[in-house]
Image (tube, rainbow over all chains, first blue to last red):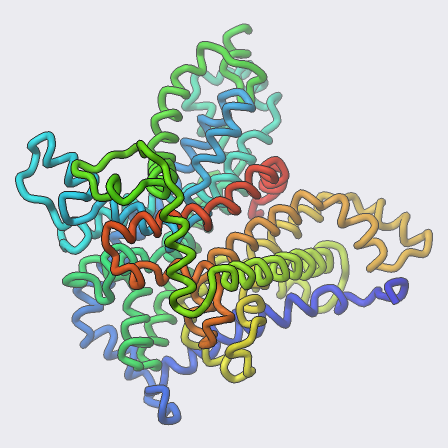
Length: 294
Length: 291
């Protein structure tokens, strides 16, 4: 049997079938449903662009909170997480192998525990009563007199979401960049210094980054995707959807709010499509940003 | 050029010029590690230490109470802890195995075989690198309901098997194997599948380990499958049980100790596997670039 398995279909079929069933088809259904009214009980009825028009013109929560929140969150966590990953990876490359391995494992570990596992730490750390670590600390040093409701207060929720997300942002992209830096041919550096490279900044911008451009791109895509992937974090931290006064409401939560709480599947699908387009455009923009550099 | 030697990339030993990097890296690492260390201490705290004011970071009299409570809460709700554990281990083992096999097969075809639509397939997969599963939770549910997979073990595995990142990484890795190796095996009469099993698999083992880890993290930590696609509590996984603990314990201080114990249990397998395979992961990542 194995002696006769030559056709490419033997190889790609299982993956393609699963890929189609659980990624392609759902995306297509989302696009189709976004043009319908669908409450999960009756059959969907076509209503054209009405969902999109409603989303962009009438949905006050969307325009006032969800979209600005999403942009704020994405444009801080994405770039900062990405730069942090690069800086840490670059510095790790400057130290000996053993200490590098230990530090890299620790830095990477939060990203593999994403989700529920770590929720508990942050809820205890930022807990609203005096048993919360941060509150106890601030009360102790006399900085505040009353405990602050960090997780349910609209003033703090977004900041905490950003900190927690940055904490877990050293993921696959970080590892790729670290490997990329380590794999640059050392003779490139030597040649560049002979040619008059003067300092480490020049080294980073003229040698390191251009030599590992593919990894930089991979890291960038992973940073963008990672940022949108952790969208549920506000709901997790505050324990409520919608989040208090919509302070931590992101696109992903808005989808759940309409899909699983209000059962307006057509409308929720329109938000999904907007989200996918948004991720795609941001990734493409990042892409061209790097393409132009050389 | 002694000074150049000291500040080069990937140094072989410690040099005082590296001190400045350590001065930045160690505080950063500590900041990242603190919450995890905290979880470890918290999980072993007896209730009087959990309730202590001001809260203490370190545990004084470690106990296993939280772990015991974690098991009893599960049995009280009718499903023993061991059942969730069994489900998680079963689903994760089967899932990781299938994911590695399917991904490497597809990656080989994309890298070394010729067929119609190959380029399109790779492009679509690259596009899917940007795919965010939670965006299509609803249509995914509809698809799964239509196929009739609700309340089936498979629904905890199948949706997580196609990992665009995994396929991408393995394909880039296989690209590095010289074609001559494959050609000479063909002259000896080997079929593509024999070449794949005997030649490719051993060479790309590091990439497969990486896919294995990514897939392990995905399946072991997944709660969406158990929450949405499974109504029968006896089929649900450990990650799902842990995600319900907040509600079950009323989110109070005593509950925090139990949840810390749960976090520790779900975190440990991830980190242990990563520590063992990190060398292979780094090896794979060296070829991870998008060209």
